[in-house]
Length: 341
Image (cartoon, rainbow, N blue to C red; front, side, top):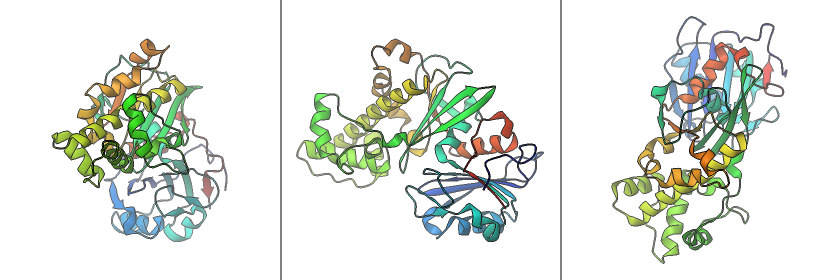
């Protein structure tokens, strides 16, 4: 393993970029500097025993390309030569990928580090604004994404480069504030005695919240999936689902505001992932933005920070591709996260 970029800091083409989530994995290939990134290949992680099998099927066989380098973003912390994903049974073993899929150079990043890179790679047509003023061009930015879990990352400008800051902010505590919250919270399923962000702000968290709202009023929950709760709420066919989605949006606003304070994110806060894309009407209803701004004594300052929903489902791949093509434009720390054979 080495933590340095080779020679001129570039990667050998063809370059594989991969965004590995808890449910889906997305792959694409950059064959050489003068061509666009290939058509993305999307696979269900449950359909393959290992990431190596998925790359073999989606890239080597279907695209017919043999990558030499790979930039992979995974849902979980990157530490050691065997990287277990948080919400998926795959284990990434970069040292073995030379033998299994022919890769000579592998960099593994946190998935929301890649989402942070995407913030500077996507255009205005790939985002939808949820209030606030204008972004300051070189100010800090933040990314959150409720999905299988809750991803959080920052993006800072330093020394003329964009520096992604990964973390596990989705596991921060989240607590009640209003009288209604105090009635609902005792029914939210904790993990080892505490309620973290993921217990509300994720797919399973939305169902968890729906159940808690129902139980708080002595009613039996009947919806069992995030899709069912979201549809019932947006279609206004189930008052319990409507309240659950509204509470979800409020809690997302509170958490996004907290993260904005951490990173002084005057460059904007970005909401990534499929859930955020599907609930844009709920996010525009007003309670999300009110909760985001409600950070006294800084409420007026918060009101100026723009929030965007990333509407491109392949944003992380775009971020990885931008880094792959011009690594010196980004301050990505590769120590302990790059393996070369």
